[in-house]
Each structure stands twice: as structure tokens, then as C-alpha cells.
Amino acid sequence: MLISEKKKLHTKFWKGELERPMLGVFLPYSGPNYPAIDIDLPAKKIMEKNRRWIEFFNNTPDERMPCVWINYGPIFLGALAGAKMEWDNDTSWSHSLAGSVDELTPPLFDKNNGLWQDYIAKFIKIKNGHFPDAIIGLTDFIGPFDILAALAGNEVLCMDLMLKPEKIGGLAEKCTDLWLACYNEHFELLPQKDGTTDVFGLFCPGRGARWSEDFTALIGPDLYRDFVLSHDARLAANLDTSYIHIHSAGIKSLEHILQIPQLSGVEISNDPNGPCLEEILNWAQEACRHKKSVMLSNWKKRLEKKDVRLILSQIDPSRTIVTLEAKDMKEAVLWRDMFQSKKDGLASKKGILPS
Image (cartoon, rainbow, N blue to C red; front, side, top):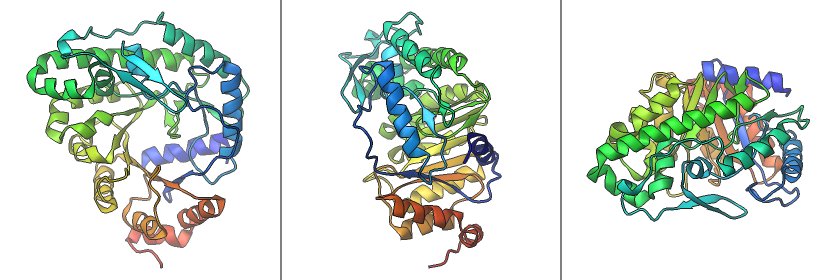
């Protein structure tokens, strides 16, 4: 499928006009063993890694957007805010020695930050490379409270939600300012302005973005409503297309997330030891009733054929994408056939699927 065709397909997803649900597939990759994190890699190696991955990706049944991007790990925005970042070949993380949020300096986005300058230098080289079969994408954006959690540490932040709510409100506002400033700088550097994508692979028309709110897994829906909601709403109000990633442990916060009027959709991660698939599907249905598009992700959570049938019988096919693990290309083709079957597609709308 051409990039232009995928853009049209993804635009239908956001508008709720799909004729069937979209499919994403996680397949074992047998290419060269590059580090996942690009901080220590020169631009030439990052470009080579992306070329190899895109070639592999475009030969799978995956209907997500092929994305060329630079991976500084999930804590990148936290590091730009002032968090101490460490990393290995697979991911990045932060360390906080703060005993209280009172010890934190309000974050401010600085274009002259050495880490940002290093990232931008690599990004410009990647942008000027030749990738006709992919889109140059955004880096991994975490939400304002994930930035604040990187600065304070999860334990301190959880405690001070109760002890210092006004201080946390002010810091979260500054984290939201930083997010928007960083996004604006990044968006202006993109070679295309008709939309964005990132490692999650959804094309977001216009000024689009996905951000993670992993911290919601540690708090209940009431705390999300009182502390986090207004900041997520502010991000959505500044974008044309937007969606929030949450882990299934924080799924009950969707009660409030789905009330954000400008938010385009949600991505729900089906995590090991998390809520059952049926509960996730109930929330997916609720999201669709609120006219929010839904990405149901099953990364490192292998599903059986009966589970896939259940998903296809319950979801709104007009505004849903499902990502599935596949042990090999044969199984990936099976998932594709289940999603593309006209008979299955019609049955899914009725809530009935063949055996």
C-alpha cells in the first residue's frame, strides 16, 4: 500500500469511516542487531537501521504507517525537563533524588540544551535522507505527568499529590508548557506538514501527536480528574489530531479521558496481569460511543484465535485498529485474512463471527 493510500485509510479511521477495522502486526525481526536506543549511535547508523526496518515492515500485513524516527527512549522529554537520564541498548529511564516536589525547579524548554541539540543534529541528517516509502516521524512524546514523574520519582509524586497539591499543579502547568514548546519546535522541522506519525504508527492529520500517560496506572480516576485531566485537555486543544496511550492498569481513568472534547482517540495497552480482555473491550466500546477512535494494542501479550474473534465481534469496525503479536508471517497472514474478510467484517457489525 502506498503512503498516500495509507494516509487516506488512517484519515478514515479518525473520522469513523472505515469499512473494517485496521490491523497492526508485531513480527519477529531477524535483521541486523542494532541497539533500540539511538543516543550513542551516529546518524549514519540510525539511518541504516531505519532503512532495514522499513524494508522489513513494508513486507508485512501491517497497516500502520512506516515511520523513520530517532529513539532516545521514553524518558527523553523528562530529560529535557531536567531529569537525570540513564539508558542501555533497550530503553531509557530517570533517577530522582528529590525527597519532595518542593526541591524541583520548574522545567523550561531550552533549545540550547545539549541533549536537544544532539537530537536535532541527528534528526536533520535523517530528514535529509531518502525515504520514499516511509514518513519522517516524531520522537516518543510522554505526557505532562509522566514528565513530572521523571523529575520527582513516582513515589514522591504519589505522596505529594496529597500533601502539596498546589505545588504539583504549578509544576504540571510548566511541564505542559515544555511539552508544547518541544512539540512546536519538532513539528516545524518535519518535512511534511499534512500530518504526523511516530513509533506507534498512526498517521495523525494536521498538527497531530500521541502522548503516554503511564503515571495513570498508579493513581485512580478521581486523582486523574483532579490533577491530570486539565493538562491533557490543554494538549488536545492545541492539536488537530491527538490520542493518549494508557496502560490497562489505568483503564478506569478513561471515564474522564473520554470527556476531553478535542481528543481524537485513545490507545489502550493490553498488559500482562492487567484487566481481562472483556473489560478492555467494554471501555473500547465506550470510547467509540464518545466518537473517539481506538487503538487496541497487544504488544508482548499474545492472543489466541478465539481472542481475536472476540475482539472482532465487539469493536466498532469503523474507528478501530488492533495490533497483534504474530509468531511468524503465516500467522500474520491469518490475522490479515480475518480482518479483511468481507464476511467477517459484516459479521463483526452484528456481533457475530463464524467459527
